[in-house]
Length: 86
Image 1: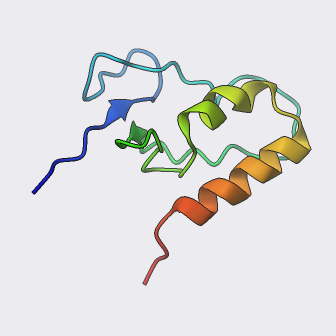
Image 2 (image 1 turned 90 degrees about the horizontal axis):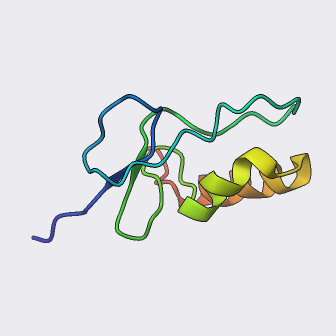
């Protein structure tokens, strides 16, 4: 069975599974009615998709500068990537 490699993308100062940490870009101050989909379960799988929120790496990075319309698009795409609860 092949193991899934994950990368850490949570808050600074918290040790992740690997050394290739990504800074927390979800908590940047911004007046937006669109909340971040971040669940705090921040790990990237082999396809660079967060197993917690379903966003791709480039969407996590783009979140801080994205407008509300783009944020809604990111949230919808991320939700579609997550497994459906049973």
